Length: 74
Picture 1 (cartoon, rainbow, N blue to C red):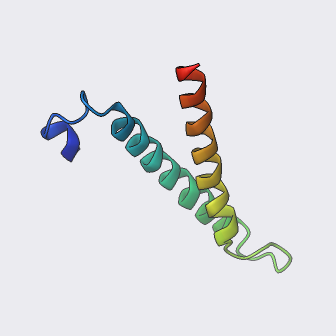
Picture 2: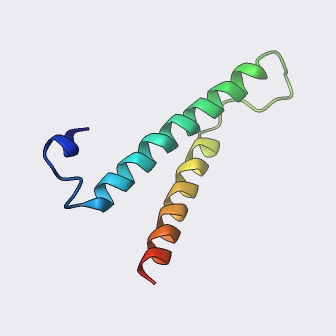
C-alpha cells in the first residue's frame, strides 16, 4: 500500500488498521450483496439490491473499530 511505501504504517497505526478494515468491509459488503442478489435472481419475492444492506456493513465496521480502540485505550 502507499502508506507502507512512505513508512507511514509505523508512525500512524490508526491509518494502517482503518484502511485494512475499509478494504475488508468493502469486499464483504459488495460481495455478499452481489451474491445474494445473484442467487435470488429468479425469485420475484426476494428483495432487490439494497444499498441499506451495504451501508449496514460499514456501520458495523465503524462500530467495531470504535469498540476495538476503546478497549485498547482502557
